[in-house]
Length: 258
Length: 163
Image (cartoon, rainbow over all chains, first blue to last red; front, side):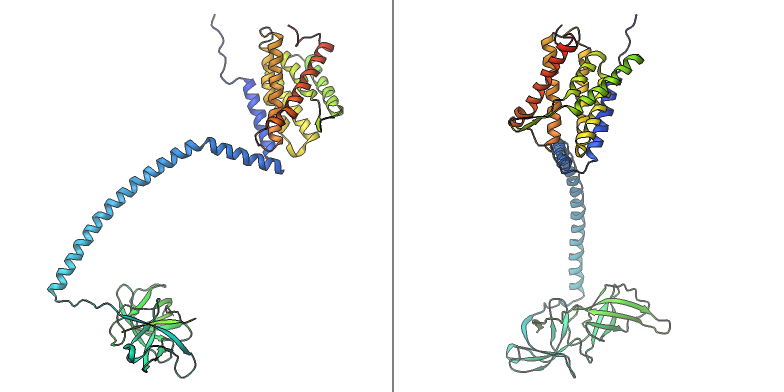
């Protein structure tokens, strides 16, 4: 006669599991400090028990990450070698075209000794002059962007017309196509970019740089960031409002490009 | 289990619950000791009817005890009594196998486990020190086993304590 099979989970074990589950549920729905502390202790115990599994998972993740990084490194190495070849090609082509190399800019640091934000000219006075090699119409900037130009130079000081002055104008380039435009200050740190054609794709946040066409300003000095763009049907140019990059508040020292 | 026995158990449960409710607590070296009659009752249920009934009854008695005495720790006694009920239910399987000494040692260990789990929950899950073990757990366990021996010899003709 075959012996009856004893199930692995019999009704006793099932009853035990059910009652224990109910008890734990009841216990953990309490909000007393004792239960909160108990939960904390048990979670610490659980994390200590699960530490090997967590450690193994972390090792596994790091291995995967390492593998990915290695793949990326190979990609970047290939890209770098490609760029290097382009760089060499560019040098050869420039040599073939007798291209002149841009001279690096030379700066002179100057302290601002006087502010004049009233009429007729919005200006500042700096503490370097002819003796230091400063002449009229030199570019003045700070670490963020263009601030103005020198308009009168003494032996030990120079008057600088600020970019916020009503009579200040500077030629700029903007966008991927490096379209030409003209920066005109309006009020405070805001200004307008005039002469940027309507077909030129622009987005808010793009930065206008000096064009280099002017005899005063060297190219690629950041001037202003686009705040808003409007296109009018009756106007062939875009109406672009910009915000100055150079910090005119708490002006303490500036750089004069010689 | 027939209806008559079920009725007897229900009546006994109510009586034991009543006794547990009105049993006096006493101080022993600044420690409040409350004899646990319910666990002795569960020992008999386990000895005669097996695991299933003792687990269910342990849970119900434990939850009633929690509801009456410690609402902030609702579930603690139910948990301990269900868990220990599983162990006490083993008595029926070895009724004719174990000697009385082995049986009493097993019951004592079960009582010990019961109070150990209970005080572990009561003391916020921190590990129980030796001092607390001797002051609370061991004394409670010893008291329970003494009451069991007295009841067994007085009312049950030494069914548990003697083979």
